[in-house]
Length: 373
Length: 100
Ligand code: SF4
Image: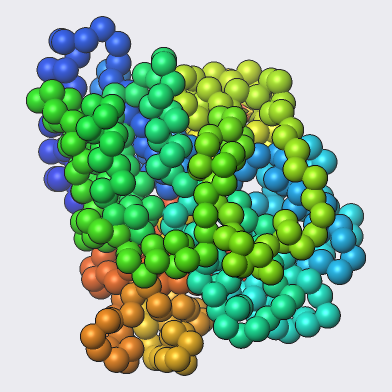
């Protein structure tokens, strides 16, 4: 069949599509609304749009694009903090490329750079540390972001800086955790998601156990998935089969990369360096208790927030932006009034339009013309 | 940033500092290998093996088949070029490849 040709194993793809359709049909007989499956990770969102998976699935299945894209949930106030730091004459601010275009209340880091601030894109926190070694007269601040996948890297970089006695390196720490965020979503009274495709690379670090509560307390299937389109189809089928049998459990479709206990060395580094923040703001989702990480007091010498004065502040999301509704699966990206109008990848209003892993950018890139027309 | 990129470990740059040399689709760089270091064997045992690298840190050992499939996927998704140029232009003031 022509649809399946671009899959690595077209015959398997066909089988999965058929089996998904059969299971969805059986499920549809027992319910009135569509089956909604949330893919937590932005990498999965990108794959789903890139391969047009939605179009090849029965209408009774909806994807809700979850909060697992760190750039997409970066609150305006934190971008403003980064800009405030970058404007200090002694500071060289470093961060990942994706963070540069996210709009804050005072514009983006890219705009701040055009206005003269010393802002560098780095591939790795190790490269930020290298800039600190090479520029002893500059204060190198690394604007650290990401989930459990990248948080260990930053922790290990802090430990390395401490071992080497590097004094001009510090973090603006915006690492966030997926587990408390899932719990906050599940606690929302009208949260209409029936099951989850779980984040593969976060689970590679955390293992699969931290997600048990999704099945035991909230009775939703949770299948940790790889990033190939076939992985996503297979995981979707595993979720549907659980729904069909009335069971909810955590399953691991990505066992070739995700060990049940995660990565012990990475987890140890995180425990050694970070503690959770009491309160952490998410763009589109508001405050979620204990969902953010900050440096433990022992590492305060590496904490930019303690070394440089910053006034913490929350900036409300723009009124026409419906990012929160997209992130919680209440509306599809194209249903946001700003989509493709005030908000495009070239001039993003909301952060979901910034990275290719953001639901709105992925939707715009692959379906844009069709959706706005 | 979150997908990770497969790389093959070609040598140990500094065993005490847990740094190894890798080849990522023809691009060479150093990565931190603490998270994949064998607990009961010398670091040299890693040479020749494939790892999944996230922001300069090897986070998981993977098979060669998995590595090649992931590289093909990244290429199809348009992310391979982006990752490689981010790796090569890291730290420069004008580099913006990774942002498109
Ligand atoms: S279109 Fe823009 S403003 Fe609307 S939800 Fe998406 S990112 Fe947010």
